[in-house]
Amino acid sequence: MFIETEGTPNPATLKFLPGRDVMGATTADFASADTTARSPLATSLFALPGVARVFLGADFVTITKNDELSWQALKPQVLGVIMEHFVAGLPVIEGDGEAALEDVLPEDAEVVAQIKELLDTRVRPAVASDGGDIVFRGYRDGVVRLHMQGACSGCPSSSATLKHGIENMLRHYVPEVISVEQVIA
Image (cartoon, rainbow, N blue to C red; front, side, top):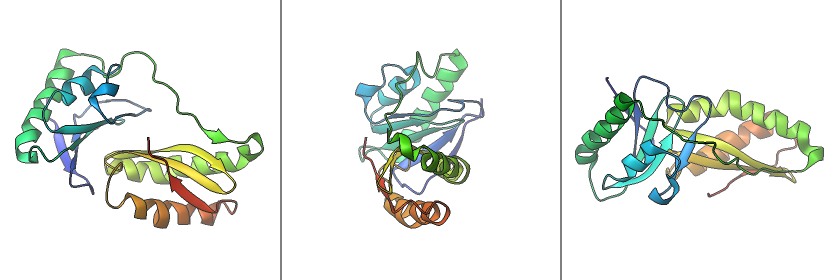
């Protein structure tokens, strides 16, 4: 098994590509070891010193490290854990994940459908290429609420991405959108 790695715009985060499906159509973001009970892979990765966040994407695993170790020291350990996990044939996620709550009024359903379509077709693929994901969390009074995951969570450029990229695009295509806010957790 050969696992490729890619840098991300977040210097504390690396993207690991095992050359196979990881999560398929869904994603899972683990901000701490306390939240990994349903993922044997994330649990094993958090057992490594220096791992601060684990994000599981369609065909990649994104690891964010703290300042304890350099990538030179941590990267081989992460590669080993990912390889052992897939070679052993263990599940990435066990059971069903909890659905994220969305704050949407019924009368805004048409606008929300347009927003979600734009996010799914134009934003999520670009964000995934950087090792992250963006999740719709709500729309009310012209304000779109989004949650950044993976490499995008805590990335120095995530605020600029939200305000200058995503907000401008949504305002252009959906006139009802006034602004975009980032939801933390």
